[in-house]
Every structure is written in structure tokens, then in C-alpha cells.
Image: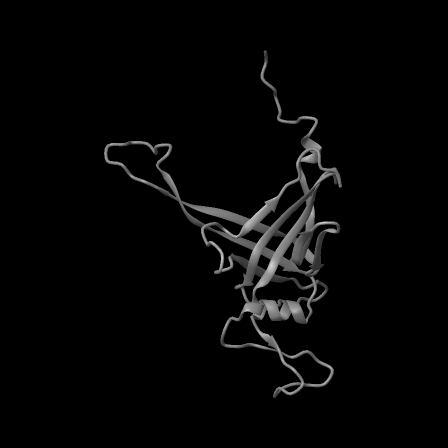
Length: 198
């Protein structure tokens, strides 16, 4: 029997991720209503998501190759880079780890949201259930990736140019709740089973 000359199968179109997808905050699955969340903002130029395990290879004297079973997990990291094509007070607050001043604050101006930097990270700075929803090429499957909590550590940078839309690059790092076990990277990937219909 000859080996196949390509890897295409009848399932290939429903397994190819396509498009930029959409970013949400507070993305959760609820019985009866399905997936719900608030759109974080429009993007331009796509995004990137990285989930990287940290692996320690145990070195054994005399072994000239890595040995199966001698690799140990030592944690990992998760990051997402989102290229926002729009700007609003929430995006400014997230990227600066700042706060929106209230009416009684010094610097407040009527008719404006004033975002000010601060000197401490508080619970509200973490985006709970930062989620990405993408689709396959034939639109038959949703691919959902959720960070338990995400903190934007890249800061705010705007590079306006004539005749071009500006993009704000925001890099989010995944964090876990310290009241739960911190023995895994706090990212979940939901990939539908073959029988799932949308």
C-alpha cells in the first residue's frame, strides 16, 4: 500500500483555523444560554496566543541522549498579543494599568473619562476570563481559548500616522487565582468534539 502524498482528509476543512477571531472579557459558558461575554474591541492585523510549558530535562551521567520519562514539567506561561484597532476608556485603563477618575478627583474634567496611572496593581486590573473565539475554515467549529485572569503588561503605545489607522498592541499574560491550585498554566482551550453542531 502506497503512503499518502498529502495530509488532506475529508475532515481537513473543518479543522483549519481561519480569520482573526474575536476577543471577549468575562467569557463563560452558562447552561441554557451557551457562551456569553463582552466584546473587548475590534482588532487589526490579527492577534497571537502562546501557551508554553516549561520543561526540565533531567541530566544523567553517561546518557548521551534525552531519556523519555526524564522530562519534568516546571510550570509554564501563557500570553496573548491583541492588536486593537479602536481606542476607548476601557482599553486605555487595561493597557496603562490605570484608573478612571471620578467626579470628585483632582484632574477630572466634565465630559471626559480621565485615565490616570497608579502605583499598585489591584484585583480589578486583571481581566477575568479573557477569551478568544475563532472559527474553522468551513465555519463548522468554534475554537475558544480562555485565560482565567489576564494582565496587560505591555503598556500603552500609540503610533499615529497620516492616512493609516493606528493599532494599539496589548500583550496580556495569564494569571491564576491564588485561592486555587497554581499548579497549571491558567489557560483552557475548548475545541469541539466531532459531533458538536453550532
